[in-house]
Length: 309
Image 1 (cartoon, rainbow, N blue to C red):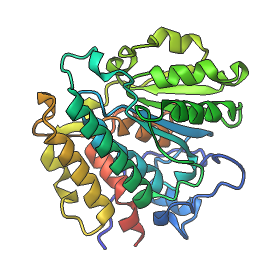
Image 2 (image 1 turned 180 degrees about the horizontal axis):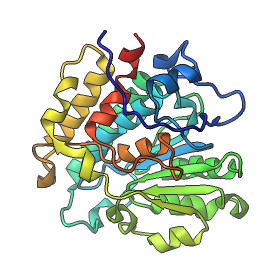
Image 3 (image 1 turned 90 degrees about the vertical axis):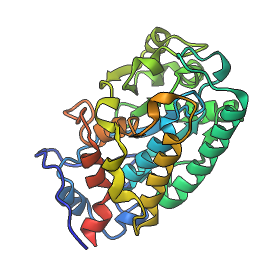
């Protein structure tokens, strides 16, 4: 198969080990038989920090961008051999979507449709891009808020200086707030919260962003990822009808979000902006991670499987 050039960011640090010393880069079907050195050779920018990941998305808010971004996030972890780092995945974290603070609103019928679509794509995404051996399940926060909260509490309570938790805030902060409130106070200092937009930070119905910070987490604001990752549909023409069903699924989900219709600003655009937080994390996080991901750079990682063939 054709070999695609990857972004060349020379980083001298070696890949950090994830959940434990036994964590390897062989987890995830695209990485079977490939060593740490092989991953770094094909993706020179790979330099994630130590620790684990929790991804909290909404998708049941007016903006449907999480529908396209979620499979991209899962695929990025798979293709960089970091699947074992993911310990929490929840969606529909807008706990009271009918008093959303955004300009546009979602009605009950569309909100339920979104929940169902997010259930479907989360289940299929885990199947396509797994195994995620340290992920118990995924959670619909509107259906099982208690289960989602407890799963995130457990992830926080497992944190330490050598094994921190990085929470990707891809939606309202309320579920994160409830988890931090219930977690062991001594563990919260080892939690990082990553945000790319104040529209998420300031949209909580039950927790303000300042209340989240007051728990004692480490905050990372990486800048609006819509700048690079919300753009023309033809940026993703390469993925349409791709022979790899995983890649084709990503295109289908971004196309679904583009046609969603609840908000006008996604028309004629494909948006995986939340995936920019994962790209920042896998390329170094707060130690030089790339805050300016583009569809080309995301594509390079998504095609690592082809590079290795």
